[in-house]
Amino acid sequence: LRTRLFWHFMKMDATFYQKHRTGDLMAHATNDLNAVQNVAGAGILTLFDSMITGGTTIIAMVLVVDWRLTIVAILPMPLLAVMARKLGTRLHAAFSESQAAFSRLNDKTQESVSGIKVIKTFGQEAEDTADFNQIVDHTVQINRRVNMIDALFDPTTSLIMGLTYVITIIYGGWQVVHGQITIGQLVSFVTYVSALVWPMFAIGRLFNILERGNASYDRVDELLQESRRSLKPKTRLRQ
Image 1 (cartoon, rainbow, N blue to C red):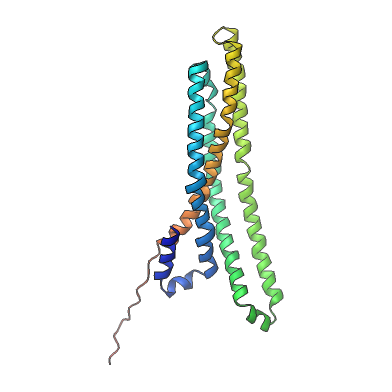
Image 2 (spheres, rainbow, N blue to C red; image 1 turned 45 degrees about the horizontal axis):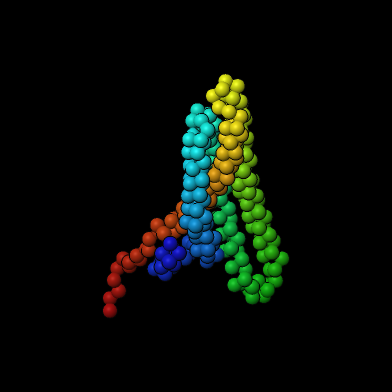
């Protein structure tokens, strides 16, 4: 994808570079592609890790302890997918704004550094610094919003896992009283539930990585969809 984007830059005409500033293109080629790369690396690793660990644990819960207790215990699990999806949608929009703000900041930095001689010649250091600080403050505000949404994933997962523990103790205790399982089996089941903590956190982390990568890929794909304009003169010049 990085090579494809580079060759796309090479074949585009001057109109493309009038529309997109150098700093903005650099942000697409570095920050956005790094987020996409994170999906292909940490995202896939997290996906397989959570699936294998979680699936193995649930199978052991069914075979070793009790299938009815297992079904009741994992009832809150779909809530994690629903909440992660809602948070992911908000994160996607916020991260897109964050990447756009980073592009503007990158563009301003490149513009100021490349034009530093002109800035000093006309004594515009204070004005240029004020403009830069304004862009920095705006970028910080947007990234704070991204971090606030990002910080909600772990508490949401912890809340759902806590609900799973409560259901396990209540229903499992009822089964012990009625002789359907033993106390030892209930203790073993609670241990299995503890083993599900990491897969559940991994799922939340996976949604986080996917939404960040998806937002960045949308920005890169928007550039790749732009085609070279063919500027043909309306009349031919006579020789």
